[in-house]
Length: 470
Image (cartoon, rainbow, N blue to C red; front, side, top):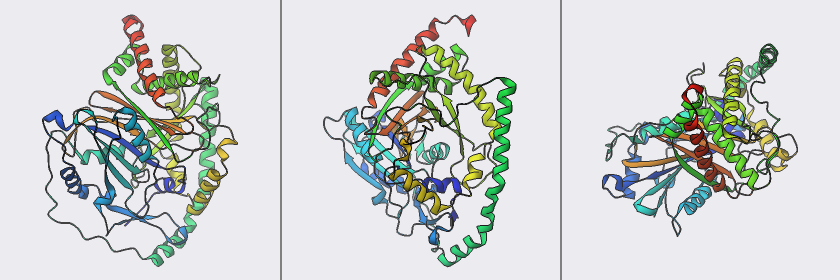
């Protein structure tokens, strides 16, 4: 038995019928790359033989009576692999649009909390004998880093690797005693008053940020609630639209080197440019810059050992009000340098420290009220979208024995921010995944198409830049 941390549990409390807080990944597999064929039953059996390496995939939630404390993870004594792994065929004509549509449909379905919080859908019928796998995990059990680490247990660096069944399978732990869980929660309740101590700490952090900006004259990171409203900054439905595009990591690194910036700066500039193009196309481009919430992993810096999600956030201006792509990139890079310094002042554990005091009932009631009343449409926009950049393996990978040709990640979307862009580097590629509320962004393929255009513009400018100017 293992208790969820406050931050992990918060993804459960904030989930509603329309705000689904799971993350997805679309893997395109090519069994023909090594002269093989795809065999569904063998593929599923290989997954089953590796599950003992990933305990999170065979555990389910157990709620504390009256939600007096965060839930606990327990072994699922009735675990059924056939429930979690599904098989579907790609609708005709079997192209990119149909794959995006079926991926969006899968992403728009809630996970069953009575079972381990994951699903894997095998989509057959892609052109060229390829196969797609749409995996779905609740954010309570993965973040960007832990999700990548989990994937590594299911991947190998050479084809055709098959695991033997474990020699010993531990018996499931007995169900926890609800009376003892409730009693423990009551005993721990006075500790919740520690939240009071967070107030002066937070005030001190904010004062330090204000003083830094006065001393340096820097604007620092963008502030929440200062973003302009766009068509995708409204209350969301459960329906999802998907788009994805692959680029070459070498092109991104060439741009980075030419202009003396970071890969993440280029990613933000590319997404910002794509969004500018999309909003111009629809006649909805705001006069002021869009603001993105950019998750930052704190796995290497957090003092907290427990928990899956170890993350903080930077609010970044995308400078969508700047037409020139190079100027946009350079200003974003300058902003990000100051934002990172402010992020260090805030500290890696700020979100985790606050989240551990999250009262389950209050959070859940507040989330439902916020959703049902569409309150996101009645206050200033917190941020326009989430942009997450996740490092992946820089070598060929074989998922359950089958070659991975591309890997597109999709994070959750939120009320008031109905679009999320997630990017992962993998084997010399940079794969962009866009997910949105379907009613707010019915045509995300236009954003994906614009990504390639912006990269081409930046690459052309990079190659025209004299070495003395870099």
